[in-house]
Image (tube, rainbow, N blue to C red; front, side, top):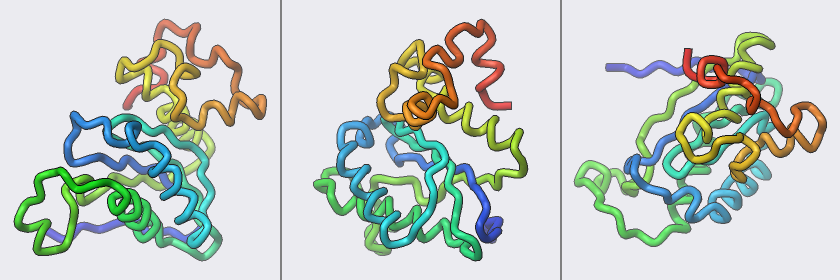
Length: 176
């Protein structure tokens, strides 16, 4: 099967990037190494982080690429690789991964979606910010420290009680 990715230069994408072990908390256990990986890659291969949430076992990211650039895959692979090289190898590595000189930390693929318009942008940004509540880690999105919601609140774009007063938050900010 040939996997086809949508490549559109200079647009905003939404990504889900998962650890291979979905019961792991590696990402938050090594949050500074992950942050370093993002900073390092952004410095060498610029992109705008529109929204981000780091969960124990996965990341949701909205990224806007520079005009004329559509190479998000390289950026994500560099982030994953740099993070992996900073972590002591204790995971089981399959023979197929060993042959390709891969670690057993990340799922090989990621899910991407091209943001189509302002409504789609807002929907995916809301999904990112509500994700820690959806997974039961917190009851209020502001309680999750590994989220771009804090930037949006600091800038006055979102109120501190965003999504807290809604009885139907899971419907508004869940998968649809």
